[in-house]
Length: 158
Image 1 (tube, one colour):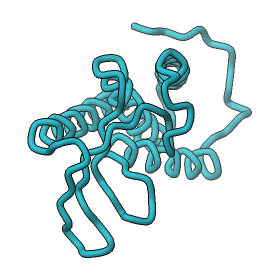
Image 2 (cartoon, rainbow, N blue to C red):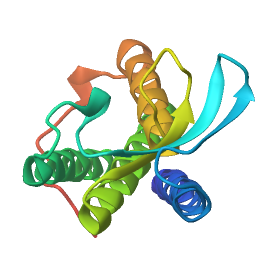
Image 3 (cartoon, helix red, strand yellow):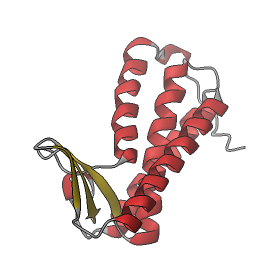
């Protein structure tokens, strides 16, 4: 199952980075293409903050906190090799999305966003993966997590 988590993470990172690369090299900043009039556009935006552009300009904080969260998620997955597949699916989506946005923030100083629903802040593939991963994590916690099985194993990062 660890392979499933790795495959999902790498797939999210690859797709997200490819779409962001395409947008950065095909669009001018702020340029938009309407796909569904009044509802959905592709718009090149640079997000220097977190969700909804909060904490804009706080690059160090916006790099360190997600890095710690991704590391803790990886540690949890590695410590629990026999969980329900929803945990690995969720972990793969969260890790891939979080790490892909971290790549942007570390390399560019901002996150590239492009999906514009007109009534919601512009977002990207990694953001979609993070939201889906959170939803699946809720399903895992509600239906498959058994706190009685937990023990105090060390994090095995091999």
